[in-house]
Structure formats: structure tokens, C-alpha cells
Image (tube, rainbow over all chains, first blue to last red; front, side, top):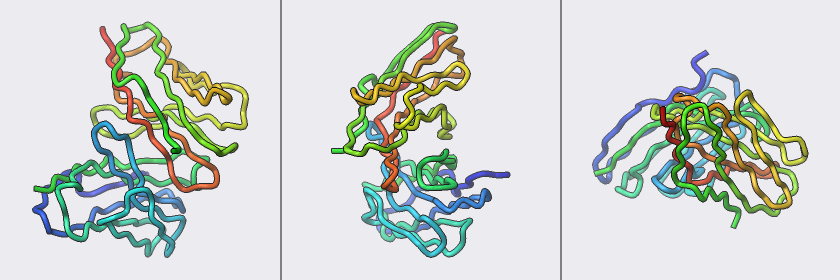
Length: 113
Length: 114
């Protein structure tokens, strides 16, 4: 099993560009989520999904879109990149919402210049 | 605010010694879960230990154990017989049963001195 796979691992964008961060899991988990990690702030939830076709906003959703067309994939779209979106992004999945282990991808370091 | 506080930005421990990392949290929920995650330089987030709030017994996983004080809203992590591979950033996190979010602390960077 690959677990949770995120691509790319590193990305540099220019302000205003758009891109999609990919996340795929092969554990048949219903629950998937995206976090961003900023220095001194821990991880904060951007968007989450409790199953295919169902998504909702987390703590810091502005500037990001998600969709969940399959159980396996949960891409995160940056619509118009801004320097404030420079961060490390983590995708996570778990069997249920919170009472089981969350498996994290290896993260994507995004720099917006 | 439903926060998780880690008051020790950095800690160090001699190899083979014991170290305790502190975590306090704030919640109005009665049913929740607490976690410690390890993040080594590879960036991978790895679950170290989990505690259900309704359980009075402190969780243990090999050299890792917690001291869960529900009334004080405290959840410290004790690492015994520290090893070089324990060097990492450690995050405390809380998840409420009725919510869809994990709330993370700001992390404690642990250095293990040979």
C-alpha cells in the first residue's frame, strides 16, 4: 500500500497563477482533508470531505477549492495564488472522522513569488 | 477559543534519558480525542499515541506514554530511553467527536543529544 500520496513535493508559483495539488489514497478511507502548516502556527484545516461528492470548509478555506469525485482522490485547487499561500500543504485521510488514526501525505512545499 | 497550547517551543534530552513534552487544551466538549504526532525532517506526520477522553487510563506505546489530566485539560507526552531517532517536531492535537477538525498546537522541537 502506498498510503497517502501527494504530488508535487515542491512547487514555485507566480502571483496570480493557478494550480492543483494532487492527493490520492489507496486505503479506501471515507474521510480526507487538507491542512496547511505555517511556521509557529501548527496545522490548520483548509477543506475536508466525508465521502465522494461531499466536501466542506475548514478553518482557512479562502482562496482554495476542492472536489471529491472518487473515494481515492481529493485535489486542492489554488485559484489565483498569493504570497500569503506560501506554506506546506498536507493531505490526510482516515477511516472515520476523528477517532481513528489520520494518515498524512509527505506534504507539498509551495512558494508563491 | 478552542485552542491547543504547547508552551515549550524547544526541548532537549540526553540520549537514554526521559523527557516530557507539555500540552494543554481548551474545549467545551465532553467527548474528544487527543493525539501526539511526530514530524521528523522528512516532513512526514507520524502518529505517536492517541488518547480517548472518556478513558481514564493513560495510553502507552512502547517508550511513549501520556499523562492525561482531563479536569486540568492537560495532555503531556513522556518519552523514555530517548533515542537519536526521536529527534523531531512533536505536535499535540485535539479532535472533537462532533466536529470534523483536528486542532493542532504550534509544536515542540525535540533535540536528542548523543
